[in-house]
Length: 145
Image (cartoon, rainbow, N blue to C red; front, top):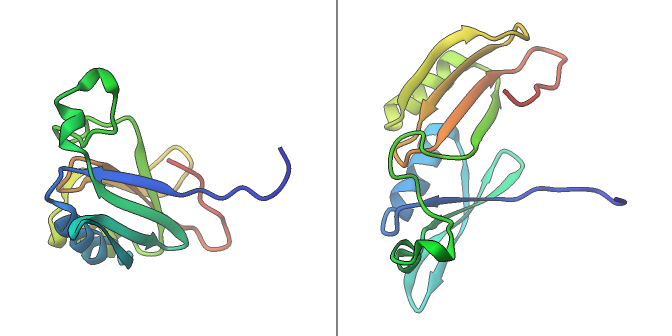
Protein backbone atom coordinates (compact mmCIF):
# COMPACT_ATOMS: atom_id res chain seq x y z
CA UNK A 1 0.00 0.00 0.00
CA UNK A 2 1.36 3.36 -0.93
CA UNK A 3 0.47 6.82 0.21
CA UNK A 4 -0.55 8.20 3.51
CA UNK A 5 -3.24 6.45 5.53
CA UNK A 6 -5.79 8.38 7.53
CA UNK A 7 -8.72 7.17 9.56
CA UNK A 8 -12.23 8.37 10.20
CA UNK A 9 -14.65 6.69 12.56
CA UNK A 10 -18.41 6.50 12.77
CA UNK A 11 -19.88 6.13 16.24
CA UNK A 12 -23.51 4.98 16.38
CA UNK A 13 -25.96 5.84 19.13
CA UNK A 14 -29.65 5.18 19.52
CA UNK A 15 -31.63 7.18 16.96
CA UNK A 16 -32.99 10.29 18.66
CA UNK A 17 -29.99 10.65 20.99
CA UNK A 18 -27.64 12.29 18.48
CA UNK A 19 -27.69 15.74 20.09
CA UNK A 20 -27.25 14.25 23.56
CA UNK A 21 -24.24 12.28 22.28
CA UNK A 22 -22.61 15.31 20.67
CA UNK A 23 -23.14 17.32 23.86
CA UNK A 24 -21.59 14.52 25.95
CA UNK A 25 -18.50 14.19 23.74
CA UNK A 26 -17.93 17.95 23.82
CA UNK A 27 -18.32 18.09 27.63
CA UNK A 28 -16.45 14.86 28.44
CA UNK A 29 -13.61 14.90 25.93
CA UNK A 30 -13.47 18.40 24.50
CA UNK A 31 -14.52 17.12 21.07
CA UNK A 32 -15.45 19.74 18.51
CA UNK A 33 -18.70 19.79 16.55
CA UNK A 34 -17.93 20.56 12.91
CA UNK A 35 -21.45 20.41 11.45
CA UNK A 36 -24.78 18.64 11.89
CA UNK A 37 -26.02 16.03 9.41
CA UNK A 38 -29.66 16.48 8.44
CA UNK A 39 -31.90 14.55 6.06
CA UNK A 40 -35.16 16.22 5.08
CA UNK A 41 -34.78 18.53 8.08
CA UNK A 42 -34.31 15.64 10.56
CA UNK A 43 -31.09 15.58 12.62
CA UNK A 44 -29.21 12.38 11.78
CA UNK A 45 -25.90 13.09 13.51
CA UNK A 46 -22.83 15.27 13.59
CA UNK A 47 -19.44 15.60 11.99
CA UNK A 48 -17.09 16.00 14.94
CA UNK A 49 -13.38 16.05 15.64
CA UNK A 50 -11.76 14.29 18.58
CA UNK A 51 -8.34 15.92 18.64
CA UNK A 52 -7.24 15.50 15.03
CA UNK A 53 -9.48 12.49 14.29
CA UNK A 54 -12.70 13.08 12.35
CA UNK A 55 -15.62 11.20 13.91
CA UNK A 56 -19.19 10.95 12.67
CA UNK A 57 -21.67 10.59 15.52
CA UNK A 58 -24.92 9.23 14.10
CA UNK A 59 -28.14 7.59 15.13
CA UNK A 60 -28.46 3.98 14.04
CA UNK A 61 -31.21 3.32 11.55
CA UNK A 62 -34.26 1.92 13.42
CA UNK A 63 -35.32 -0.01 10.28
CA UNK A 64 -32.10 -2.01 10.46
CA UNK A 65 -33.00 -2.95 14.02
CA UNK A 66 -36.18 -4.54 12.60
CA UNK A 67 -34.16 -6.48 10.01
CA UNK A 68 -31.07 -7.77 11.84
CA UNK A 69 -30.11 -10.12 8.99
CA UNK A 70 -29.22 -7.03 6.94
CA UNK A 71 -26.58 -6.20 9.52
CA UNK A 72 -25.71 -3.07 11.43
CA UNK A 73 -24.41 -0.81 12.38
CA UNK A 74 -26.47 -0.97 15.53
CA UNK A 75 -26.08 1.02 18.73
CA UNK A 76 -24.91 -0.80 21.90
CA UNK A 77 -27.91 -2.23 23.80
CA UNK A 78 -26.00 -2.43 27.08
CA UNK A 79 -22.82 -0.85 28.41
CA UNK A 80 -19.87 -2.61 26.83
CA UNK A 81 -21.81 -4.71 24.32
CA UNK A 82 -19.46 -3.44 21.61
CA UNK A 83 -16.77 -4.83 19.35
CA UNK A 84 -14.29 -1.97 19.73
CA UNK A 85 -12.78 0.18 22.44
CA UNK A 86 -11.94 3.79 21.66
CA UNK A 87 -8.64 4.94 23.14
CA UNK A 88 -7.97 8.57 24.03
CA UNK A 89 -4.40 9.58 24.77
CA UNK A 90 -4.66 12.44 27.25
CA UNK A 91 -2.34 14.66 29.28
CA UNK A 92 -4.02 14.48 32.73
CA UNK A 93 -5.88 11.28 33.51
CA UNK A 94 -7.47 12.42 36.78
CA UNK A 95 -8.90 15.48 35.06
CA UNK A 96 -10.14 13.39 32.11
CA UNK A 97 -11.87 10.84 34.34
CA UNK A 98 -13.45 13.57 36.48
CA UNK A 99 -14.62 15.53 33.42
CA UNK A 100 -16.12 12.43 31.76
CA UNK A 101 -17.86 11.41 35.01
CA UNK A 102 -19.35 14.86 35.46
CA UNK A 103 -20.63 14.70 31.87
CA UNK A 104 -22.41 11.39 32.55
CA UNK A 105 -19.87 8.60 32.02
CA UNK A 106 -19.66 5.60 34.34
CA UNK A 107 -16.24 4.43 35.57
CA UNK A 108 -15.39 0.98 34.23
CA UNK A 109 -11.81 0.79 35.56
CA UNK A 110 -10.34 3.31 37.99
CA UNK A 111 -6.98 4.92 37.29
CA UNK A 112 -4.24 2.30 37.48
CA UNK A 113 -0.91 1.32 35.93
CA UNK A 114 -0.97 -0.99 32.94
CA UNK A 115 1.68 -3.54 31.94
CA UNK A 116 3.50 -0.89 29.89
CA UNK A 117 3.85 1.43 32.89
CA UNK A 118 1.21 3.89 31.70
CA UNK A 119 -1.56 5.33 33.86
CA UNK A 120 -4.86 4.19 32.39
CA UNK A 121 -8.58 4.10 33.17
CA UNK A 122 -11.71 3.18 31.26
CA UNK A 123 -15.27 4.43 31.20
CA UNK A 124 -18.64 3.63 29.67
CA UNK A 125 -20.18 6.61 27.91
CA UNK A 126 -23.97 7.09 28.31
CA UNK A 127 -24.47 5.32 24.95
CA UNK A 128 -22.74 2.03 25.86
CA UNK A 129 -19.34 2.57 24.24
CA UNK A 130 -16.10 1.82 26.10
CA UNK A 131 -13.40 4.47 26.20
CA UNK A 132 -9.86 3.69 27.36
CA UNK A 133 -8.06 6.74 28.74
CA UNK A 134 -4.28 6.61 28.53
CA UNK A 135 -2.12 9.28 30.10
CA UNK A 136 0.64 10.37 27.73
CA UNK A 137 4.16 10.06 29.00
CA UNK A 138 6.36 13.07 28.31
CA UNK A 139 8.28 12.50 25.09
CA UNK A 140 6.46 9.27 24.18
CA UNK A 141 3.76 8.52 21.65
CA UNK A 142 1.09 6.45 23.39
CA UNK A 143 0.00 3.19 21.80
CA UNK A 144 -3.48 1.65 21.89
CA UNK A 145 -4.51 0.10 25.20
